[in-house]
Length: 157
Image 1 (cartoon, rainbow, N blue to C red):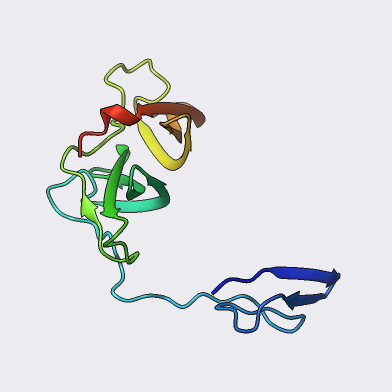
Image 2 (tube, rainbow, N blue to C red):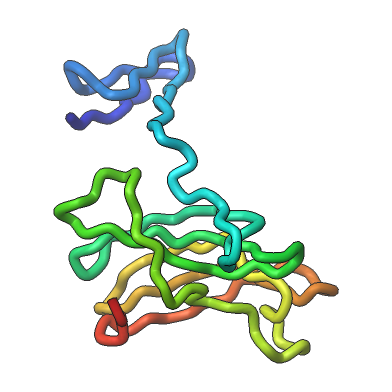
């Protein structure tokens, strides 16, 4: 089912669809329905996301959906991991955690801008590469934006 919200005036909106999943007019708000089971990626002891699994971003690439997320095993040590689902099996709920996580670990060099935290992944595909933007900083500095690039042929799964 598809549709789009057309703005008529400041407080009037109209859906261009007979039966939208989420509907909005001047007296209501768009509401999403939570899907069970939640959470779909729970924190898991003994992993890089044993304290937190957060900040998801989903991308379709190479016949799979990739869910990039921030994991934290100890306070102040955030890294980016990925889970995936094949296009045929995708339901938005069931994900396979990539065994080689984290895919973007913190830098081993204390002076690097991303030696303390790596979080907030945002991915885009361009020219058969995945460009993964992320927020990062040393433990004593301000956040900055980093970029990691994955060549299509280097996907290991």
